[in-house]
Length: 386
Image 1: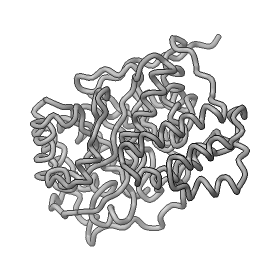
Image 2: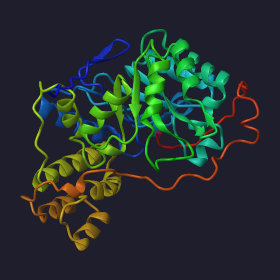
Image 3: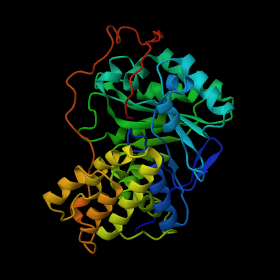
């Protein structure tokens, strides 16, 4: 006899999420336009937006300095609640000041701290996935954010398994985050050395869940379908899931996840045919142009390959999508697609960047010498999430 899996609501600080699903911040993707499309689809297909949709990562110092790009990146829609912002920093003072600014000016309802980025231009400056190795500095950053919030917004933390297989940090990171006042932690179950290659080690999520018992533990890595989220929660006992690459070109995934995790309370939405996908693409493009102006058309180009994956769209038409120059041209090209084509099996499975693992993670000179060193290495690198 099979049992129906129903995930409990996820509480992060004062917020209770009906669906324990979080959209992972992704640079150039999780802007206001994409978040709006995801929320609209979840609302239309399930009755309400149930999860947490996090914006693109913003540098704490850029926010404090009111960098124009940073200020545009933190724009939220009028119906977005809770408004979720991710900050990146290597400096406790900067993140404390940024969180105080967020609270004083009511810029967001939730702040997530990024310690998951594995790219060399970040880790070589001690940021991202390199930083949790410095236990005292890691603690000081979280404490500064929590103190800056003064209980007005919850602070959450995302990190990786560690730098490489010889330097795992996630259990210490989870304990430190919990003891420093974080409202939840999320683990991308890969090391920095892996980048996005190979298979995420979900057993690490299970170990973290056993180790961190006072706050929710979320799992991240290799969730490309609703069934993946159910398997992760069942296998690891985690309290929720964080979805990144799996929603690229599939913003309706959050509706599928809400249904799959509802224990049958929400009917599973049918997969869209190509005509419905085309309507979603056009809505996405219109919102991106509204948000980013004419530059939004160029930003939209990368999304077409994700949306059209597996569909029988010829190379010539795909090539035109990759060089499209206006909304009118996008609408014309979408009209040329075979509207009734059903969603293909070929569109299922892993998507987005993967690449090969790094032979050696780029780190500052002497970074591994003393994990208790709390010296700040100022870093002005823009990067994606982890």
